[in-house]
Image (cartoon, rainbow over all chains, first blue to last red; front, side, top):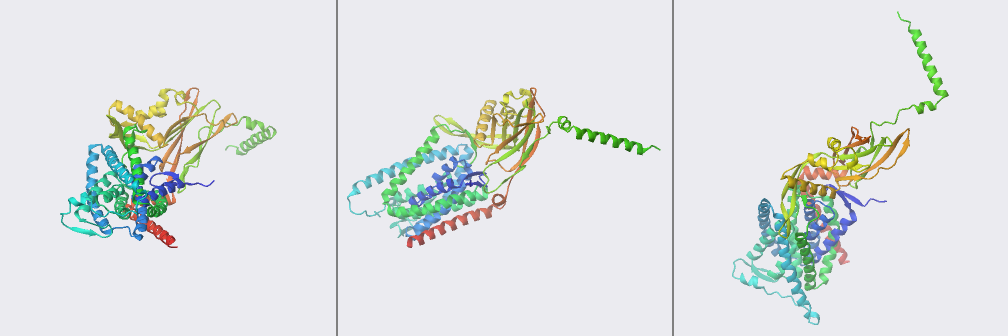
Length: 310
Length: 267
């Protein structure tokens, strides 16, 4: 009988090849579909199959680099990436990420970083998920017999507040005008949260782009992948260099599945309506939130674990 | 001067008589032969290689014992210090409540006994020989109060058992075959896939007449080879290069697949 297990040199254990390909494929599909890196889903799944938390988080970042490259390439070809907006968000994200690393250091010294990270997740996902679900659901219902949907390009209340800020810029691809300061500050915020939570930040960035920056959903997905790509390149390199925790074999198997999955996700994304995409993403966000919340309320099986991870 | 030719003649006579006796009665050789080697045991292989397709391995252990003897095997790894996060309940929420450091803990601690460990020799004997979790608890140093120590050690063992690196298995050994009054047992010890590379000792304990005899020991080497060894070396000794390769490979594969799917879609 053939051996379908492969040994992961850094994780120090062997896992079924098909299991890793399947996990990567499923998460990659969601990545291409919604423009999220999938780190908030894949890392808990890797923990469930017995991968060390530190290695799981680091290798996950590595595979997100591939998935977001693949997804971003598809969206770029379809003209769905706002590079101008993306670069500003990335610059903010780098500064925010550096600040976030310092924040996490302080939290660790206080001794309860893990709890605060999870609470942060639950609050954020608990607010974003239901809001996104409700908004998309109410929009979908009356539109059953309505004429074809027209994208609203008007700036929201958030943008209006800052209309008088300097460095105004028009973002052609997104069809919005605003001060550069706004996406830059939001990039910092996402960078801080991404560093604290240990993920690319796509699932935070997507709602921010949709609701605060009022960008069209299909451009949001491509631009978010662009931002996630650079965040995860930074995280992968730093994890490999400082913690020696990137398992290349694990990452390659996951990314083999996820890059393929991301392509299918991007294709399906083109066929679905923006509100359908949002309602699906909100359901996934809610499921993740419930899982996180149960982790805070239900006694864990093991009361001791290796330090690190998220 | 002594007459050596006379002595030589006598020796030849003794040898000849012995040979004649043996040829006439070959059974006598077998009947009076000593018991099979009871002072050692064999392991196969003595070196396990962790390659790309490694998924644990069965270690074959050949043991000779007397029929009424009980046997125990212990696989132990090197001792180390380990720092862990500790979870606790604060009000109604479970959170990390601090860290705890364990010193002098074996990386691996697997015991296979032919009967319950508590029935294998006296407490003092097991303590002397280092057999069992109760003994291990006394050897491990934990930073913290005494109550915290006891609770934490139990949780530590639970975590290690979850990783399949600790375990006490007390199931009857295979019956084996009887030969020359000794029992020959072949025991297959499962080496978990999670075992780290390193040097290990396998100790064989035999209990005879209520007493545990001095253990016999063998060394086992587990090492990474081929691609696994190469990647580990790159990751730990050339971290910058490794990080760069990891990122470059991921971007290349991602774009390549994106390109490929783009072409497929156009067709």
